[in-house]
Amino acid sequence: MKKSTKINLTKHDYIILGAGASGLMLAYRMAQDSYFDNKSILIFDKTKDKGNDRTWCFWEEGKGEWDDVITKTWSKIFFGSQAYSEIIDILPYKYKMIRSEDFYKSLWKTILKKPNITFINDTVDSFTELKDGVQVIAKKGTYFGSKLFNSWHNTSVYQSQEKYPVLQQHFIGWFVKTKEENFDDSIATFMDFTVPQNGNTRFMYVLPMDKNTALFEYTLFSKDLLEQSEYEDAIKNYLEERGIRDYEVIEKERGAIPMTSFKFPQLNSKHILNIGTAGGWTKASTGYTFRNTSKKTKELIKFLKREDNLTKFHKKSKYWFYDLIFLDVLANHNQEGSALFSSMFKKANIKTIFRFLDEESTFLEDLKIILSVPPKRFIQAFFKRVF
Image (cartoon, rainbow, N blue to C red; front, side, top):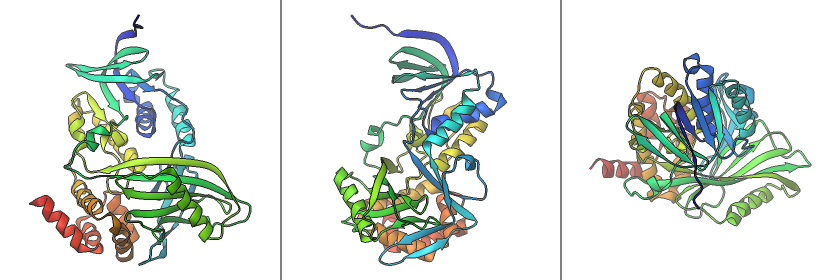
């Protein structure tokens, strides 16, 4: 006998699918704004307390919105490769690190104070656009809402197409603790391409929390994932080459973030908006998501006060095309990533690079970045796209 599900005929104003970074940030901003006090808001996720399932890093100038939950900051970064290596002072920027458990707890503290926001511990099977709203079918019931914000991304929508390249930023990270003071915790290793490239774009990313503890993350920008042992052997070799043999792995993390210029906004509709990675909020050329999500959720709150049609939220940007050309080059010549990034970091000012990657650069700054990378591949990719 088929088990029946509860049908909730109440129509809610907003339904948020997923209590990760983008879903919680949106709910948090709604909780902070009195405009939403009389709106009924549901948050769906199969897990509320996710713990330290993510480590987010971003650069930022001066004091920021999330400084109260920052784990560590650095004012210097190291870039390393066979062609160019340097410790770079990034002031007035700082490179900031947030562990997800502190972040989630901080946002939930504000969200749960609002009686109009409800968390539902359930797995969503499907959601459907209706004439005047959205229907959500979950394991425990069926719900209706005026607007739905979906952060659960479906990889098949971009993996099944061939018009836009699809790479992944994939990694395994080890939090390593040593008895001796092995780390300079004033410097974050941003990209170290001195590891064997093996036909890909591969680098080590190192974030020292103190002189005895650091996160070592073996990272690739490429199409295919590796066997777990290959990531972990690379970390072991990297540590050994630096004379670090007596250590304890106190925590591990793993991730694969899509890097693609697929037009995610075409999946949005009048009542459904995809957010976070599902909405294409990940910076296609780098895999960075956190800061962009912070900016986008702020913009979305303003948008909801003046607009009803969610298809109007997305605005076209020159950076989409920049990212597309970059990914075309990286997808077709993945072994040249080290040379590409080395040239950029050697020739361009770090503040210009940050502004460009934050999509806040002027046309003159764009030109400086364009002139800093090897021209041949980018010219080929440009003309192939244009013609």
